[in-house]
Length: 225
Image 1 (tube, one colour):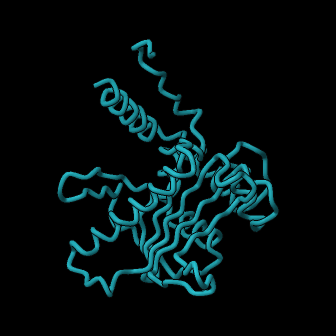
Image 2 (cartoon, helix red, strand yellow; image 1 turned 90 degrees about the vertical axis):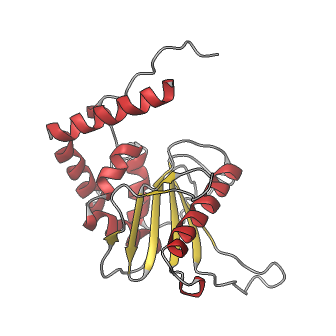
């Protein structure tokens, strides 16, 4: 049962990278966003373009709409990066990536793209909790043949899950430092320090604080309704 009272809005000063709102703000910094994608996927990207500010995809009939945290395009590939704050369980989170993938493809096809020209896509979920047994920091999924696991379908889609509570030594020091930062642990990593400095700069901007409070109150009102 619920008490019917308003849940407290987290103070602006207490927001961290693990909070969805702050994560969105940080990922709006092109260099930080680009470097994070490069570190996670171990690739180099020439540039990234934000496809739409606070991109929201709406299914054109009666389906659910989704809001993508970071929806960018780089070197003819689409990257969707999500800070998955709530642990819905392995199965539901897996299905969420399937739904996000379908919305990305539907949006492209609706814009007149031939299905044979759909761009490669990566859906990256950053999770401040354990997944799939709790051992790994990173899980990468592609479609493979069950009869011959060396054979990939090559449909251009990849799903990546980063878990801060992994136990194995299975990611680079940069990514391990980033995941530790999500957990609130200290680190001397240069990239993480640049993120932390950027967050501190954001927090002293009054207009950003006001925007957050307005957003939080609207979310609370919608929840109450």
